[in-house]
Length: 240
Ligand code: 9D3
Image (cartoon, rainbow, N blue to C red; front, side):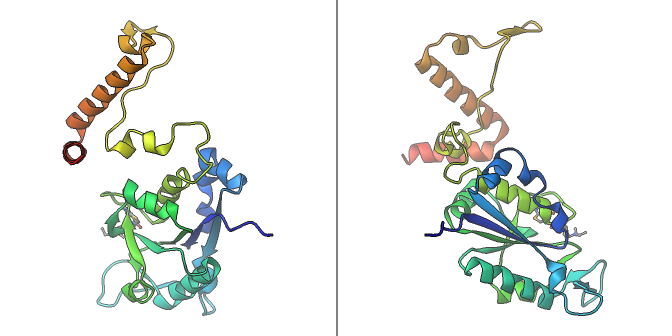
């Protein structure tokens, strides 16, 4: 008997030294050591065929910067898909992609893993994304210098949902964010610090009051800071 392959992130990058990076530490790093997930990094440059091992070229139509060549990316994708048994979804981290959210993270964590293509330069030739059915995902409306930090964000978010990774902490389903609310504030000792007291309900030991106080706080902070989340939460409460 051989153990089934754990949830696997295959990462295609021209900066393989950026991995595991922060994913080798803390929660994700412990889970990696324990074999709860696997990381397989492919250097896109290994799939270049010319003697200069070039992976990029100038854009047709002109303009600044360079574009990753479709033939090189295709060869790297082919190897990644062969290693994955082609069942893991292929995702290109791109500022033009669908915004990553917890629903997509849950979906990806529930599958066999992901193949993540990290762009550098101006991006990747569009034809290889179409030919291989690669989805595009963005992590937010700000400009990074490449896809690697975005891939690490996606992997971190998925890995913490894998069975056995979270240990004793609250199950993901109980998390405030999973319910569509921002979290209530947190406090620890000392009970008074620089003249600031910890809110009374938290000191009471009355679990029902504590639960109610935290829910009120979570609702109020969500209403103030994130009208978008608040509107959805209200709708979902109404719909049952
Ligand atoms: C100077 C280049 N840009 C014109 C404004 C286009 C551009 C190309 C490549 C901008 C950023 C990048 C690199 N970013 C990513 O690869 C990326 C990203 C991001 O920048 N923001 C949010 N999510 C992502 S996922 C990948």
